[in-house]
Image (cartoon, rainbow over all chains, first blue to last red; front, side, top):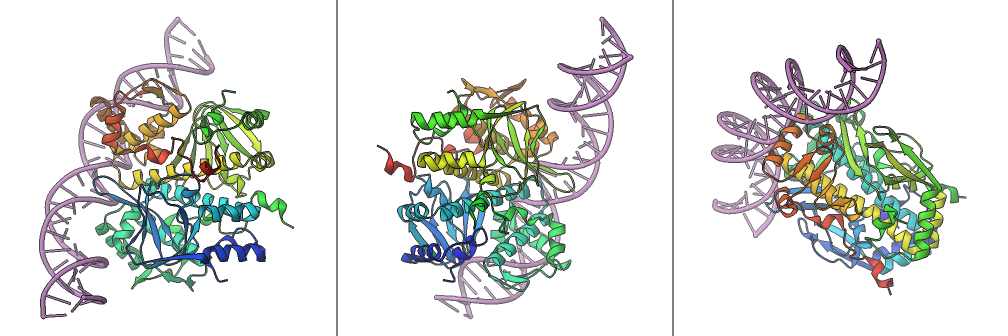
Length: 247
Length: 247
DNA sequence: CGGCCCATTGAATTGCCTCAACGCTCGTGG
DNA sequence: CCACGAGCGTTGAGGCAATTCAATGGGCCG
C-alpha cells in the first residue's frame, strides 16, 4: 500500500481503509511502462483512460508550429497526468516521459465509480485539479515576472517540496533527472543561459547539482532569493469545505 | 434568465429547466457590486463564498514582495472567480475588479447542495475548472515561448472568443477595458513595450483599438501571426465522460 | 574506438527594459 | 468657468538580460 497516489491524497484528506483499498486496486489493474523520452499521449489524441504516475518523471508540454517547445508541468509520482479526460475528448497538449516511468491506467468509468461511491475521493480529485491550477498560476508568475535566476531557484524549491510530500527526498537532496535543455524549456530560457545561471546558483552555494542529484543546503535561503512561498502548493492538510464533514 | 453563467455552462452541456432555474436562483440571492479597481479578495483572506462574474471585468493577480505584479487571468461575465474555495481555506492570490463589476455570491453550502442534487451541474463545475487550467497552461506557453507581438495577439484572440461565447461581442468587435499597464502585467511586458507593439499591430491592420473597443478585422490572420489555436478554450460542446449519459 | 548527447565557454546580437519627458483627456475643486 | 492635477498614452535614448551562433570538452554506450 505504499502507493504515491494515496500518500499524495492523504496530504489533503484522511482516507478510510476501504477507500485506500479501492484506490490501490484500481491503480494496479492496468500498469503501463515506458522508457525515457517516450511519449505517453500526444496532442490531438482521444484518451480513454486516466493516467497516474506511480514511478519516474514525466511532463506536459506544448509545441508551436515552428518547433518552439514549452514544458507546462512536471509530473512526479502521485500526480495525475490527464484529469482533462474527465471533461474533454481531445488532448490539447502532449505528455512525455522524462525518465523511465510506470503509470497506472484507470478507465473513465472506473474512476467515475470510485468517485461516486466515495464523496471523499471525489473531493480529493477536485483538490488535485485545484492544486494543479494553483501551480500553473505560479508558473505564470515565474515566467512573467521572475528573473532567470529566480525562475530556476523557484522551480527547484517547488520540485523539492513536491517530492518531499510523497517521500522521495533524502535529507536536503532529491533526484533531478532533467537536462539543462529540459530546464530551459520549462523556464522559457535558452539552454545556454540555463547553464550560466546554474553556475551562479552553484557558486553562491545555493544549490549543489551533480549527477542527477540536487541538494539544497539552505532551503530557506533559496526560497528567499527566489521569492518562493510554499502556500500555493497547498501541501498542508488545511481542509476546504470537506472539513465540515470530518468527525 | 439571460444569465452569463448559464450561457457559459451551456457551451459544455445541456441543462434542464430545473437546473437552470436552481442556478439562476442561487446566483441572484446575494449580489455584490464593486467599483473599478477595487479589490474583491486579497491574498491570505479566508473566503466563505464563491463569486461568479455577472457583469464587468475582473482579474486574478499576484504581487511579489518587491512590487512586481502579474495578472494571472482575466475574468469576464460567466467566469468563476474562486473555485479554490471548494478545497482551500486561504486565497493564494488576489482578485481585483478592472471595471465596475456585479458578482453573484454563493455560499459553499449552497453550491454543494446544487452539485449534490444535479450530477450534471457537478460535472459542469469540474468542466469550468479544467477549462481554467487549460487556459492557464496556454498562458504558460505564451509567456515562455511567444514574442511580445504574439503574446498580445494571442491574448486578443482569446479574449474575443471568450466574450463571443457569452454573447458579448458585436460583429468583430468587443470591449477591452484594459489599460496598457494591465496588458503589460498580463503578458509580462513593460507598458512602454506594450505601447510600441500595439502600434505595430495597428499599423499592420491586425487590430483596431480605440477608446475601449477592440476590433479584429481578420481573426484568422491574427490567429495565424499569434500562433493561436482555439482548441484549448474548449468552447465547442465536445463532451467528455458526460456524453455517455446524454439521451 | 567512434559517435552521440549533454554540458560548457566565448563573442556578437537583439528584444525588451528603464529612465525620462511630454501631451492628452477627464474629473475635481476653487 | 477655468485651472489644476492625475492617470494614461506616446516617444526617444541608452542599457542590460538573455539570445543566437559556434566551437570545444566530457561521459556513456554500442
